[in-house]
Length: 109
Ligand code: FES
Image 1 (cartoon, rainbow, N blue to C red):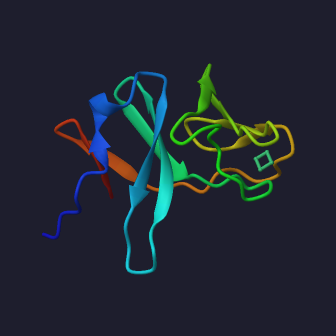
Image 2 (image 1 turned 90 degrees about the vertical axis):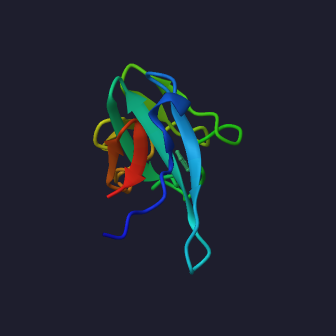
Image 3 (image 1 turned 120 degrees about the vertical axis):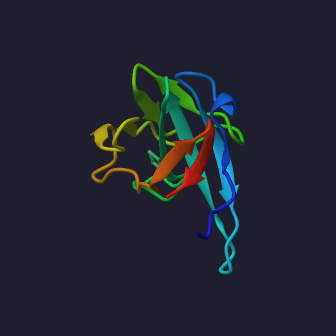
C-alpha cells in the first residue's frame, strides 16, 4: 500500500485551532488549512471562495472560534466541520480535502 506522508501531528494543532500545511505536488503544490475539534480534524484549501484570498491574517494564523473560521480578507464565515458558508460575502463553501487521523498523525485519505 502506498502511504502518503503525514501532513502533521494532531498535537501540532491546538484544540479548537487551525494551522496551515503546505502540500507538495508535481504541479507546484497547494496549501491547506487544517482545523481541529477535539479528536476530529477537517482540512480545506486555504483559499476563500469569495475572492480567492488566503483565509489567514498572517501566515498560519487563522480566526477560529465557536466552530467557525472567518476569512481575514473580508469576513466571510465558514463552518469548521463542513466548510459551508455561514455569512459574509461568500456564496460557496470551502473546498474540502479528505484527511484521516492514524496514530495521532494527520494524513490525506
Ligand atoms: S476573499 Fe475571503 S471574504 Fe473576501
